[in-house]
Length: 391
Image (cartoon, rainbow, N blue to C red; front, side):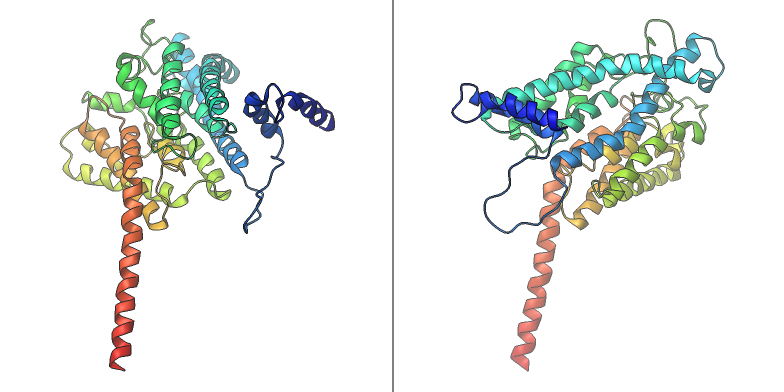
C-alpha cells in the first residue's frame, strides 16, 4: 500500500494550492479519501475522538445491502429462466445459471447509476470547491436495487440525474437534503415513465415481450384475484418484484448489520414494522376486498415494505432525529405504507410515498417532541418556584 500512497502523493502535486489544476483538487481528493483516511483534522474546539467517519458509515451500509443485492441478482435470473425453461418452480433453476443471468441484467443498472450520479457529484464538487461527499456510495447502490430489471438505461440515467440535482444538490448536497435521494429517483421514474414502473409486465425480464408472467402479489390482489405464494416464498423472496426488494430475510440480515454497527436506528425499524402490522390488522377487521383481507403478517414480507423501512426510512439525514421522534416517524412510515397500498389499487406498493411523506414531516415531528420536553421542564420549574414561595 506504500507504493499506492506514493503514487497518489505524486498525482496530487498538480492539484495542490497555487498549482495550475488547483480547481480540480476535489476530484483527486475523492480518490485519495476513498482509499485512505483523510489527513486533515479540526483546528480548534474540543472534539470526541472516534474511528467512525462518513466514509466508514457509508461503507457499512453498502455491506448491509450486499445480501439483498446478491439475492436480487439470483432471483432476477431465476424468475426469468424458470418460465423460459418451462420449469415448475423458480427454485428448480440451476443456481449459477440464475445468478449469472441476473448479474448480467443488474450490473448495467448499477454502472449507469454510479457513472451518472458520481459524474454530477464531481462536477458540483469542482464548481463549489468542496470535497466529494461519500453519500452517493449508498444512493448509487440503492437506486438500481429498487427499480424493475428491464427499466431502459436512459430512463434510469435521467432518474438518477433528477435525484442528485433536485433531490440533493438543490438543497446544498449531502446532509442537506430533505428527501431520500433514492426514493426521489424512483418517484420521478414512477410519474415520468409509469408504463415502465407499474403494472404486471415489468417485474420479470422480458415479461412484456415474451409473454412471461411477472405479476406481483400486490398487483394480483389489486385486481381482486387470489395469490398462490406462501408466507415462506414471500419472506424468502421467491417472487417477482424490483431487483432487490423481494427477500425480507436478506433485508433483515442487512438490518442486523445496521443495528449492530449502530448505523441504522432500531427504533425506526421496529416501529415501522409495528405500524405496518397494526394497519394490516385494522384492514383485516373490515375485510371488504382482497387487499383488506390479505393477512397482516403477509403485508410485512411482500413488496418493498421491509426494504423501505430498513434502508430508506433509517436515512439519518431525512429521518427524525430525536429518540421519541424516531418511534413516531417509523410507526407512521409503516402505518401509511400499508394504508396507501390498500386504498390505491393503481399503485398497491405505497411504502415509497409513505416514506417521502414522512421525510417532509420529520422536522415537524422533532419540533413538537423538543417543544413537549421544553414545556415539561417549564412546568417542573413553575412547580418548584411555587413550592419555594410557600415554604
